[in-house]
Length: 431
Image 1 (cartoon, helix red, strand yellow):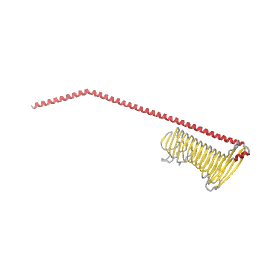
Image 2 (image 1 turned 90 degrees about the vertical axis):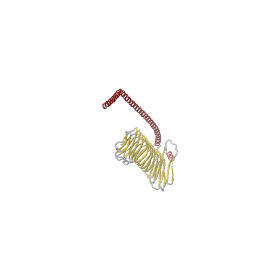
Image 3 (image 1 turned 180 degrees about the vertical axis):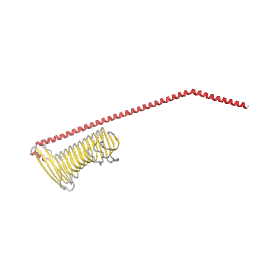
């Protein structure tokens, strides 16, 4: 019985083993049959993924290409707009130059006509050698700081220092005619109207109407005044001469020159003339078609047009300029201009402790002497120009190109002085 039982146990185990082996065989066969299909599917999946990646890359390239083309089109459009803007600016400047040329031509014609008139009068005077002179003497007593006002034509005004309590006039009236009678008639046609109102003394030349073909007239003033006199002087076709003033001076001069030694405070309006001044504390200027020789000026303000200024020493200035040339031998403190057009500006020396230079210019070459010994914050810009900073050492720069310089010049990090220059159609040069 025991043996029979073992035999049955073995038989059952054999059947189970055979079933397991059969299952393994069936599984192996099934796997062998499905593996090629799986591999094929994997290959197709990988190929599809690669194709998708290629398509994605192609789309990205096309996107980048489209973006690049758009940027190029935008840049081209911007350049075209800039070219059109520059062309419009050139046309505008050309129109402005043409307008100014016409104005200058008209001014030259006017000046030439005036010169021709004066030359004709001089020629008539050369023929009519007969002169008649009248002398006018007037004296006024003043007790406080006086004001002298003179309005004259065709003659000189000369101011000299006199007594502390008097203003004394010596006026020479000259008439010229073809004979003594006519010369006297012309001289007597001229009057000088005097007036005193408190401490204000005024004198005004009046030219009467005279009919003559060959005649001339001249009125020369010589006035002795107290040192503390305030002056208001108007003259046409003649010079003004004075020595020293300690009170404000107001000059309106046409077709003549001003000659002065030392002025405290001067307000000058000069057309078609000029000035030679040794020293002036404060000067306000309005100039046209005039030339100046100025030795020492403390402070200057105003405007100049079609003029030339040569200043040996200048403390500070705040002016506008067009069609004028200014040369400064030495700048001590500051120079400011919000309009400097169609001229030249040169500064031969700038003190190391200067405070500010600010220039807004166009069509004006600018040459100023700044060296490695100067310390300042710089903002320089040109449009259609160039910048040459010479031997200036920059402590640091945030921008430095051929037409823009922004930085700190010198040896200290926080200088107090500033140099701001903007120039269109002109260069900036540090010498």
